[in-house]
Length: 344
Image 1 (cartoon, rainbow, N blue to C red):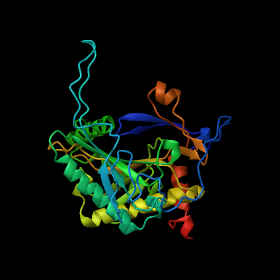
Image 2: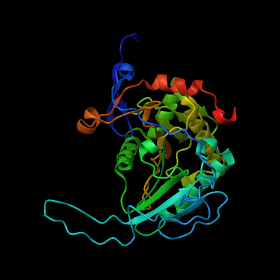
Image 3: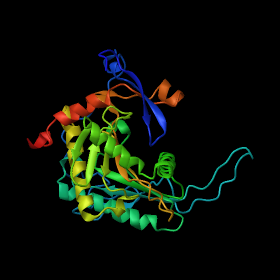
Image 4: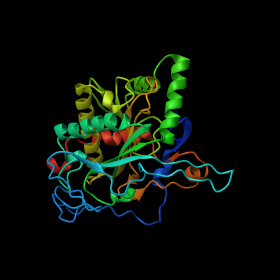
């Protein structure tokens, strides 16, 4: 390998697209507005927070005085059980109902306690809630997919800092998962092996991008990472849904989530924003054994106060352009302590 600038395309086997890596662009001049990341202390309880225990929500319901995790139907759902059949305005256009159920998952009763600062047993409670909700919602008539995710930080548009995630149970499968499913099924037919299993083996053989590993789980910056600090957290055993994990695997997943989120916060000693997504197979009783459940973190920052902006290559061209080297970012995450900076 030469020491010059890295201009490279890397194949993303799950999305089936090329990612352009131009790592030398990280230091390019920037005269735009800096992102302001809040660092002021946050209290454990806020009386006007509609997610804190015992408080009134926007829709008029009152939260339970919960002590661990808490889930409720979203007061402002993006999909609903009572949608009407739409009429297309012209024969050329297509439309259909967006049916489903949306729920909010409060990770902790404490307003200021993110996953990075929660204890592993409490994170395991969140994993078990994901499992229970996937089983419950996935068995409902008309539900084809259970989409679980967490938006964390002002820069990704979070309206309430109380640590929480969301669940969408929908009559459709989200596009990214459709593409991943098709890629996984094709790979299985052609090679009689799991696509993500081969990805894990390749990352283990390389080793440079691995952040956490135990008997059941591997966490790493993928070779084809699109965001600077993108991380995959993957069970070693191929299961299509989080609900299929054993108790030991669920606890291992919680330890990996703790390790990764602590490393995020420790990079710049601040609460680290990201979008966390559970990638699961559909729940419509199809045979999705080739699909491999995993969790992906998509952090929007490439510097403490600088976003990864989507511009011409991404929005207009359809190919992601990574301004950083996955190996360099993995080395940064590997170098920081695995104990949260607030506890040292």
